Image 1 (cartoon, helix red, strand yellow):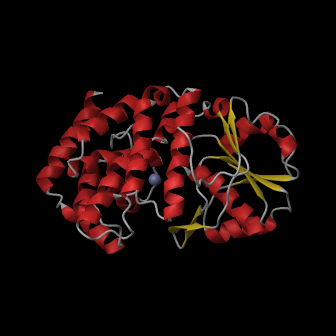
Image 2 (cartoon, rainbow, N blue to C red):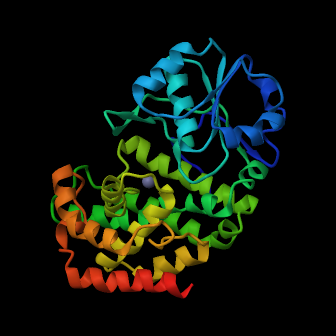
Image 3 (cartoon, rainbow, N blue to C red):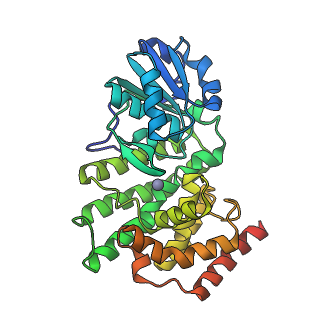
Length: 344
Ligand SMILES: [Zn+2]
């Protein structure tokens, strides 16, 4: 897909082996990473960093303290998944130095978004403003990650299916928080169509499939950055995830828990549920709560509490505000969700 308009990537280095010997182009550099990705990357890039920061906590006080301690450098090289990339983004913004982002897995879109997610008093806040120069996408490197984690990246693109309908519902009831744009909705749905078209490539993590996920993320930015909100990509499917995260107090693979939200909310919306579930199956995107280690009674309790939680949190207007989630509906839903996982 062609990337038109504003996106948040200053330059890009996409291909096989693009991380090889990269250090030569970085000047003095500091690496922000985690042990597993660094082990894969260290040899490939060559050179010797001034320091390697193993990112553990994203609590703002700990991050700030680490940044104060790290040496002066020309470049921050952020290597890994969400947290290591967010740390690098935040550091490059604080220091005003160059950022090079090198995701080692596509499960979250942190590597193309300008703000870094940090914990402030145990809540996530999005801070700073950064742009990778370049964004390094090395297909060989990405394929070292388990396929299902790269495929999970498609979850944050498929959320367009439910999120755009939520936005339409909000607009129809006069409760949209932002000026509604039918043009943005149709552009976002083109991204969905592209994921559908490339589903087989994504499932097998070919060069083309991995690139389709990256392009999808960048395309979302061309819609969301000018609008200054992520309404086309975030709706009721994310709200269920937030409730579950608060209830269960543990991390999830983002794209998979969002996929569970897409399953549930497309059904509540009566929004081509069978079609989107079939697409998730074709992608090999796992949405089953049993794989996410969510017990049936936990999911049931979450769904019962969801409308109240969403109202209390002041989340955007969505199908959750429009249709009540009845116990009998939840039972049928869970029969299907947990029944499916027993058959597999
Ligand atoms: Zn998301």
